[in-house]
Length: 516
Image (spheres, rainbow, N blue to C red):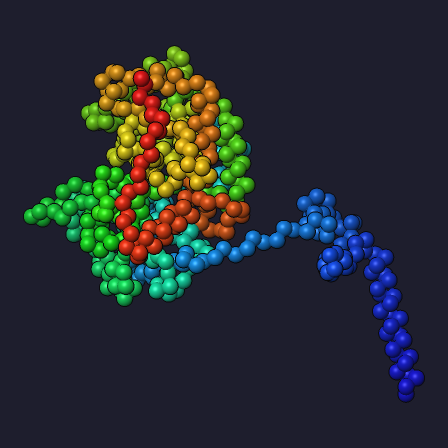
């Protein structure tokens, strides 16, 4: 019996030895590699396998070039955020909701987590949006994003935030995912009375302030996004039933006086501690999914040929109500013989040209300066589009500048405290009085000065864009959302400590162009 066992054992050993010898002869990479006293195990492969024709595949499987280790996990200490679970009646853009079904609503434009429709490649004759040979937009990462889409984009980004918690008591901040602007849009002005404009938002705030989590800090740890200008949420209660004006009273309600509210434009003259709304950038059309996409676009914007000295995309207003716009069109007409001004008239063809992201970005990427006069308010989405195109913004009022409105985003965290010129400010009153000519003021900048300003603008692109909210971003890059969350958490931390939240002092010595 023992002899049989010995014989079977020898058969097994012989079989295993033969198999091992065959493997070693067949595979031309070692199964094990000894390094630094340890053992690294790699999957063997044959150089005859077809997928190795790609150099990247070779590197990925070659033990001599191991992949870099994953980055260490980011600590969530002091960074947890709790998302309020709103009742279904406050899900503004849910299918079947009044804002979703209204013909005047914009929820139907919020596809792709708020990004809107994908901008299809411009090749193969795809010129349905009027793009021309100057088209500069790449074929990935760009969308037809509505200017009011930030509420939806921000909500989806927050769902991917690394430090979420189900416990509001453990959170540094509490996010309220209510779409105030999308709810208001169908009845912003016109025949709708105050009850209609304020009804849904008022009901949401009453419900919110009744929660136990609100009572802990009186709502001072709560924040929300309202993707319109602050002015649209500051309508005072009407007298004698008179609806009056446009907008609703979101910002004048007692509940929001304790909250932090993020809008596209704030009231810069409001003194602390009353100020509780903060301006954040409009979403533009670029929503990358990797740092490589951003670097590629920055390089493309930096290398763009810019034949126009200045450009404007906008429209005149009836009866000359915004006279500065009339002067801008006059300046472009006067510049026609010199071919120094590019313009998109948003009043022509029903505004079709200005609804084309490709045509807009082609214009801005072909211009050294992009004019940003006042519109319905001080801030324009166009000013952020100009940054995305690497075009130096030209403002005509102090309240339109990034340093007054987008203080969180215009600062360069790596600038070492040194502020460099990146915009031009021309006093609109001096233009209207004929003291300053727009083309004359801008033509005084040397090529070197323009190149330096454009470099600063292009460096700002990551801080003004919003990443694709549907995927995990590849690479290490802070965008507008990251900056917002960090600043909100820091603000709430200071509130909880009872610190004075006065406005940060404005820096002196900024270079401003007034044509003189």
